[in-house]
Each structure stands twice: as structure tokens, then as C-alpha cells.
Length: 426
Image 1 (cartoon, rainbow, N blue to C red):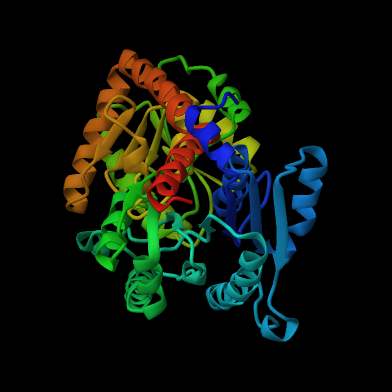
Image 2: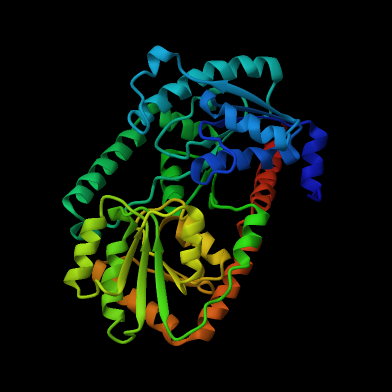
């Protein structure tokens, strides 16, 4: 990568960065992929990078380093003692374990700081704004994020949820309220030189917690080779029109809104189909809704598929429908955009940062009825205007190349580091 003046400046300063990346695995998406790729980008302009991550990430990290060394990155693997983690099984107890892990790495980081003398500390993963990072207590500028979790399903939509979904939402609100009132979360916010927010809703909450400076930045990015592979997906041709939703079948993903909109849309465009790829606790409810609305023969549930199979389904569809009600990331939106597919999403969370008026439709989410009506209008416009689909698809591909590569995230992060170092005289 060609060096910008900012990269040259930081290199001359001999910048030493400590990164906290609880989740950090090469070749993965979501949080583990964010941890790994942000470390790689930081290593492009920092002189030394020290990464504290979980010990169970060690094997896959060392396998990746054997193929692609990162000579200026030092890895420190840490886990709680066996007696303090026997109760953690899979997702069970993960938040309590993570909280205790954060406490444990503070003492490790303090010893490292005395030895190395860091200029910056950056907490990368987990990306929850309502969980603290005790590394903010170190006497150097602290960067927090990208963090999310401040997004909420609008209350008007609760009546469309199953009982399970309603209980989940109220428990989530309670957990977030408790987190915001955790004195260590407030300490993390006050001591942050800067926080990166995955969505505007989280940015607002970070400001209320007392963060001095907040930058809104999508966590989603792809390596150049993946962007090129997706860009090679051909545009569909033919008289049929096919919509796709892809993701876990959870109430907050809003797929029930997609089915409700499709049931109205298909009356004017009877040759249309709606494919849903994924599985989860809401599948039976969604299948029942399709039957009740008389579109069971037009809505096809493919279940959970391996990524390669899911991408083949994407190639066989014209438009991605992603009506998620609180989604910090929205990785599938960027995937679809890279493949030249327009996106219909809600103007909420991460997708609201990714999709523009040139690349799809962002539907305001005021009420379920209004949202469904406007989704129908978007479906109709795209179905009746192939040229619009092509134009939006081309714009979507360009936007991914310009804004959603890991190199672009590295450039943005480099500018942020440079600004903090100039302000703080690192």
C-alpha cells in the first residue's frame, strides 16, 4: 500500500499501540474478522503493535502468521484461570466471562505499558458500548471502538413480535440500562479520547455517556479479493423478479415485514418470488405468516446454507431485502452491494450508513403499516424498472470499492491516530 504523508509521519514517530481484541480470528466475519483485520491495518502504519487476545485464538492466528507474517505485531494470549471459566460453555456466560477478562487484561496491560511505553491504547472487540474497557485507566490516549448496541427496535413494532421477541427486547433494554449505569462504563466513556460508533444511534448514546469525541464509522469491510469476487457476480436477466433476505431468522431481523410487504406487492407482480436464506427460532412463525397471507407458494425458505451456497442464491436474485430493526453491522447489505444488487433496508442502524439513495431504498421506520407500504413501493419501482436496478447495482459496486475495503478502514484509522497524536503530542 502506498504511504500517505500521515502514514509517513506516524512511522517516523515510532508509534507503539496496544490493542485489545477479545475476538480476533483470520478468515472470519463479524467480530473475529473485525479484530483480525483492524490489527492488520494498524500494523501498516504503527511501528509496534501489541495485541491482547484470548488464548483460544492462538492456533488459528499462528497458522495465518505462518502464511502471512506480521513482523511488527506482538501477540499476548490471555485467559482467566480454569477455575474462573469452568462455567462458560459456548454462548452461556459469555458476557460475565468477557467482563472478568477485561479486568484481568488491565493488570497485564499495565505491566506491558511499563515495559514498552505505549503511545495509544485501542479497544477493538467486543464492540459493545455498554460493556467497559479497563484499559481506559492507562495513562495514554484511549480509543474505544468500533462499538454498537445503541440501536433499538422502535416501540411501535413491538406488537408485531412474538411473545419470545417481546421478552427479548425488554430484557435487552434492561441490560443496556444497567450497562449505561455501570460506573466503569461511564469511566470508559469519560476517559476515551475518541469513540468509534457503528451507527448513529450508538453515537448519540456515547455522547450522553460523556465521550468527548465520537466518529460514526461502519465496522463492515471486505478484503480487495473478496470485493473483486463479488463484483464478478453477473446481473440477472429474464422476466421473473426475485427478492432475497439472508440472515438468522430472529424477530428483530424484520423478515416478517418483508413477507407482509411481499404479500401486497405480488398482487401487482404475480411472477415475483421471495427467497429467505437462514434459520432460527422465528422460522415457524414466518412460514405460518406466509400461509396466512396466501403467499406460501411464492415464499421459499432455504434454511441455513454454507456461505458459498448462500452467495449462489444471491446471484439468482435481483434485490436484497434487509428490514432489520436494530443491526449494528449489516454485513449482508455490503455483500449484496458488492454483487451489484440494490438493497431495500430500514433507515436504522448499520445499514443506514451503508445504503444510499443511489444504491437502494432506506425506509423510515415509524410504524409497521407505514414501513410495509413504503417497502411495497420500493419493490414495485425496482420490479418495473430494470434500468433502475442496473443503475443502482453499478452505484452499489462503486460504493463498496470506495468505502468498504479494509484498506479504506486503515486510511480512516490512520487519520484518527494522527490527529490524536498531534493533539496529545504522543
